[in-house]
Length: 73
Image (cartoon, rainbow, N blue to C red; front, side, top):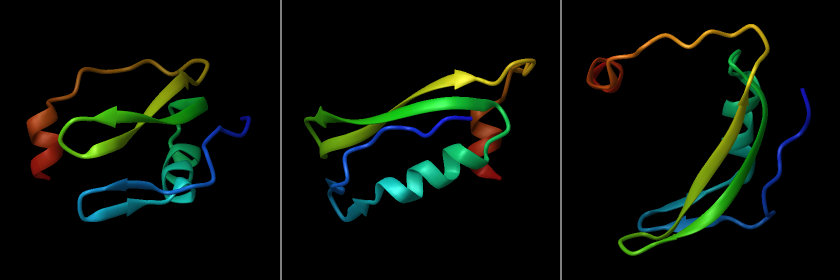
């Protein structure tokens, strides 16, 4: 696995300061992710939000997920 890319500054959204290290920690521990890059993108409502581009790990086969079930659990 290689290191991702993110500006050292915080992404500041209404009520939150998103630290690059937090996002990277989650991405690094996910078994389906081999590599990643995180960028800031403009958002009309929040000012800016993080956006991740990921490379699926070799041999990982994605399964359909019920997003509402995942969110509600």
